[in-house]
Structures are given as C-alpha cells and as structure tokens.
Image (cartoon, rainbow, N blue to C red; front, side, top):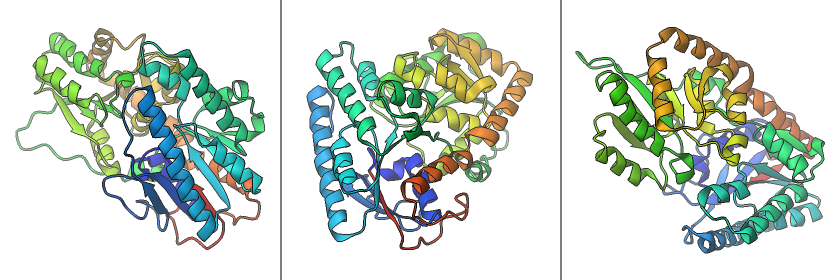
Length: 412
C-alpha cells in the first residue's frame, strides 16, 4: 500500500523488483496516477490496484478527509484481495499513518504487517503550518505510535528514523530494520549519455535541484541564489535547472520572471528515471536547500542520494542525516540562505580540484554503502524472517524473473 501513484515511487518499484526476484508475487494498492498502468513499471507481474483521489486539498479538514478516504479505499481493495486471492503479508508506506487498524486485522489472522516508515507526519505538519494545533499534533503522534507498535516489523529509511521508532514509538530494536533509499549500481551505470553540445555552443556549468517542490522544500532559495550568482560571476558560464513538480512550482516560475532569470533558470517539471540520470550526468553541482527544521534534520532526502550516486558535489544545509549521507561529498552552509548558497556554489565552480575530490568521495560512498544493492539485503532478510517458508532469493540484484506462485505480498 503506497501513498502516491506507485509508478512515481522509485523506492517501491525497487522493493517490488527485489521481491519478484526472490520469488514472491506482489500486488500494489495506491492512488491512481494519470496513466493508470495495470502493471508496475520495471516489474514483470506486479499488479496495481489503484483508487481515485477526489478529496485531495490543503488545510487540516481537507487532509483529514483525504486520509479517511485513503483508509476506506485501501481497506476495500485489500479485503477484495483477501477474498478472491492469496495475501500472506502486507507492507504499508506512510504518510498517512492511518493504516494501523489493518495491522490489527492482519496480525489477528496470523499474517505479518510491515510499516515502511517514509515520513515524519507530526514534523511534516509542523513544517506546513505557521501555527500547528496541539490537538492535531497529538493525533498525528498517536497515529504514528500506533503505526509503529501495531506492525510486525518496521522499516526505517535511516538511523534517525530507527531511533525514533525505538525511543518515541517504544519498538523493540530487533523489530526495526534500516533500509535506505537509493538507485542501484546498474541504474547509475546505464542512466544514459549526455546530449552533446551543438556546434559552437559554449560550455556552461549546470547547477541542479532535483526533487519535490512544495513550500517546506525551500526551493525558492534556489531561484534567489541564481540572482545572487549573477552579481558574483555574471550570466555567461552557468545555468540553474530545477527538476521536479509540486505545489510551489507555479510561484517559482513567477519568481524567476520577476527577477529577470528566465534565461538562467530552467524548470523541467517531473522527470522519469532515465531523464533524471541524463540530467545529473550533465550537472556540475547539485543543491539541497531544505531549511534546518527538525524534520529535515532527521530525514534523508532522496535527492541527496541521487546526487551522490552520480558523483555530484553537493551544496547543502548542514543537517544530521545529510552529513550521514553525503559526508565529504558536500559543502555545508548553516541555513540555506540564498547568499550562503550562492557563495558556496561560486567557490566550487572556481575550484575544479575540490570538485574532483568531492566527486571521488561521492562515488565511493555510493558504491560501498548507499546503493540499493547493499540495502536490498536487509530488506529481503526481513521478509525471510517474517515468512520463513518463503523461497530463498537467487540474486536480488539480477533482473526480475517471472515469479513462482508462492507467497503473495501486498504493498500499500
């Protein structure tokens, strides 16, 4: 069970590919995307059971209605699968943290229920509002705790999330497994060749932001950084590419126009996996502008792993999990203020030797630790423990083969 269209969630795609390669059959319950695929892209036979999202909006009441609808829609589809097919276990991804009643149902039936913890819902709410309501925070924290406590096992995306599950959620440490996000080694090796420059076209440095573009992501700082860079180094040898989509994208386009930056700042919209690879292969520096909120301190940004995987030097706000991910592949600034970001970018653009050193660090961190090839081992080991009669994986890193009709897992 997934909280966004599964075809846009690369973590879920990789998890389903791994499960198929290990011999499991997988179904995904998720919100309906515009293309409405029946089979999850990148997999052999993972079926998608999608539902519409008529209640998406903003504000506390809209989110409450949306989350209630998600619980109803997911429950209906899960019950249908239980009746007409075989479901041996369920994995749920958050937000929202409303699926713990299903954990009680599944565990009462003797079937494992795994909580794949993607986001800190209470902290996310605090980021999205200037005046968080204590009652709403209390409910979010309660639902988060119930999601941790009711699950058979918890998957955390980093060490900070694992510590929260143990300390704030009261989970036994042995029930919590860290499985980080990140592309596979093969994805990075085969993510496309950069488009060659046209004859006579001048080489330009490319500064990239890749990811979601919502208010809490602070991407307006990237646009304003471009304005500061004009004053530091002119307009001739660099450009900024903002790749992604979200609620703030229309306003960022307006901001670039207001500050006379449309020739320097390009907005690509949402990119598919091969397009992401092609863009990052042409980039010189990547930016992570997330402000140092509690949520950002404790979260691993998917974009940071994508940057490091391609050997990109990163300019990032100095935060706990960002340092744990990028290490020496990043130049850290205190707050993400545009002046800080512009100064750091300007320094790196002028220092090719430092950029080369950061590239080596980035590639080494990815190849030895961060790649999905390393993370998948813990993921499949968890499922073998929960379903001891399940088949042994052949090689989870190999392309998915037609799965044998063994254990049926549902991801939502």
